[in-house]
Length: 196
Length: 148
Image 1 (spheres, each protein chain N blue to C red):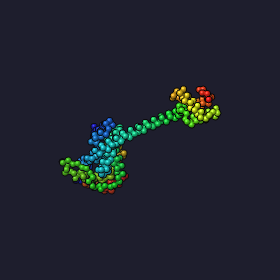
Image 2: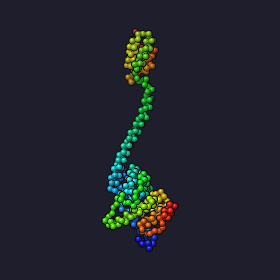
Image 3: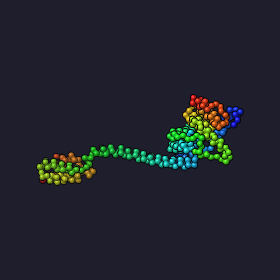
Image 4: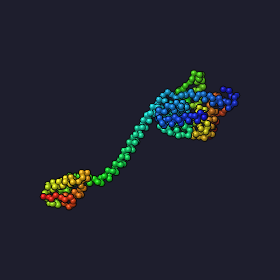
């Protein structure tokens, strides 16, 4: 069973428990999904507080209507989609711009052996924040959630090929921002192609 | 990073670099208690709203039954209620004109007849006013007492 299918199964089980036991079972679903959902929402909203608002709204909806998840064909993808929609709603409602290079809003955690790499992690997050959210969300779903382009397509309501091309453009930009593979082409040219 | 490596290797390194940063951002400590608190409040409100909706539905149901029942019972109102003072007065007046008797005595006689008829009939089913009116004039059953 791959990681996504396992998550699907676990999310469905938690949703069933929510149906049977009620709000008390929300703890389990939170433990299983909160970190993943928060990092997706924060990537879209570019602010920790707003991202958490989106996650809270989505999980509240699940608590009120657990059938949404337990009856879904792919509960994990459905939950990701719910959080993404809530994040976009929060973005639309707030309409204020945050300084993209500033990560002071983030709640971070680094183990002792990772402490040396904290700067690298910050660089990745800064670079992700500078991407359009349509591209950064694909990167998060692909690399952090391990979804296929087809699964990403169903979460974002786009075709798998669109998801793949957004991913490619995003990686090119990230590569330049993180200075890992050098300038492949100008950023404007990449943006023009992405717009097409 | 070196740009002499093949592009696929560079991309793989980049993916790995991004992947390693996945646990860097974590939910705040307040998120869980806040979520649970709000979820509990929502559940409570939901229960109250459901109880309110059930009560309202019950009231509407009762209203739907009672109003038509009262409407249909009002058809029999004349048959189950005693004559009002104005009706008795009218009967006394009719009696006075019919027998050309003393006005006060007509009233006394009418009251006596109402009382008599009331005691003869089932307490729950009193005599219809029409019948009482006819009786007080001596033109229907039961028979009237002879007026002095």
